[in-house]
Length: 131
Image 1: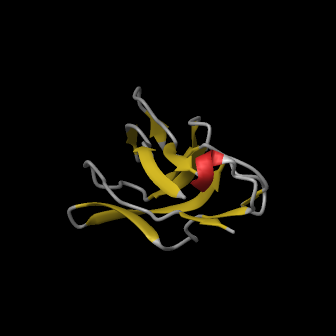
Image 2 (image 1 turned 30 degrees about the vertical axis):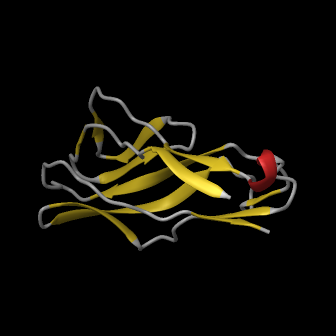
């Protein structure tokens, strides 16, 4: 099985205000919590293309594992923000009984009060196991 990233997780532009959260769902919908202020910009869920062996029948069970909380950081210089609560379009429990050609992943960004302005970057790992 091949898993190929086809689009990154984009939180878009925002102002930290008094801090809070910025969430991009696995469907690409952006929302905020606390004092975070959303600014006009694009947001997107991460996208991964999945190609199954043997022509793509995908009839075996596929397990999707997303990062746990407290592991992924986005950084801009010395400043950082935690990325938690990863979600995907995989069924609850992360197990698929058939093909899922595109895996969409969203998450929540933890924004501190007065978070430093910058272009933040980070990476995360998704594990797809074909059994």
